[in-house]
Image 1 (cartoon, rainbow, N blue to C red):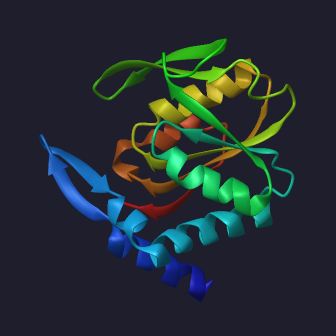
Image 2 (cartoon, helix red, strand yellow; image 1 turned 45 degrees about the vertical axis):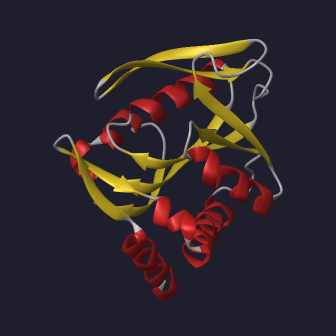
Length: 177
């Protein structure tokens, strides 16, 4: 437990707090630049999954920063990785869901054959703010008839209460603000 706290502190120390247009913004780029910090993130996610979700079959990464952490975790776990992207970015037949963002509307999509009915999946992203993107990805998984084991994020902005949108799913975050 002490090691976990130490790793979370190492990660938190790398996150830069920037403000854009009056909105708090957390920059994860320093984590990506530092091999030890990036390894700590993946180590903690891997530990969480191995302890709580041994039967996971796919890691689902959300556009775009979920693509940074998801493949590394999937490779460590020996499972596949699937993309959830913004509308119009994936080839072939897709399934989509519209959702609200704190600053507008968007659509998320997944390739129609990316997830099989009944597959056990974990969703991963860098940040949980208002919860719109993760909620939309969970809805995509529902359309695909997948079993969502949980959601994982590096950062959770607790004051924005995004976790309220995800009540029916477990959410694991490494750092909370």
